Length: 107
Length: 107
Image 1 (tube, rainbow over the protein chains, first blue to last red):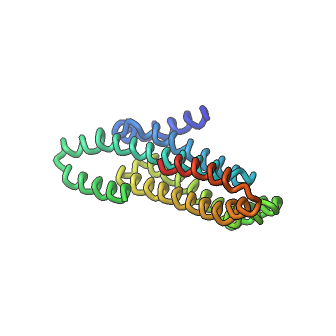
Image 2 (image 1 turned 60 degrees about the vertical axis):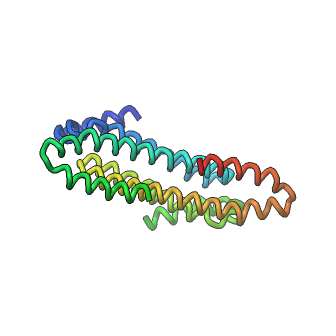
Image 3 (image 1 turned 135 degrees about the vertical axis):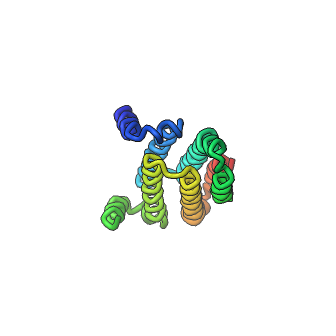
């Protein structure tokens, strides 16, 4: 896990512009790595014939983790991208694309 | 992908009782494999610095896929486990554990 995080940091540090603009990209990537591991664990539960209610509870935890990852992406977007867009005077277009994404996320 | 599915089938066929009781276990495992791949693809999007609204849309798709996988688990549970439990006269306990799981899933 630790080595994985170091590797992610190394990949991100190759793109300084990205790392500067989005402060929480690494946080989101690490959250997604944990979600991946969680999904793999649920597959193991199914193969072992674990009770359905236990599987449902774990799927609920994954759904909640995806929701939290999206929340971090959204916060980062508001703090970084939209702030920059407002400075550059291109915020109308950016707000529109965010609104579209939120419509799809919430529906 | 095809080899992966064959491998899952082989693992499941080692447990005939499980395969008989839950008709859709393989379907759920394959759905979870696709979710794993989707999450990996979103990590790549973040590393490539793709726009936040695009990432949000993909996270929405993952959330929806998790919800659908849970729906299949629930249908399978109702058709297989609860049906068996009703025959054996142990349905009260089973209904209680399903209710608990649903409470956690819906909240």
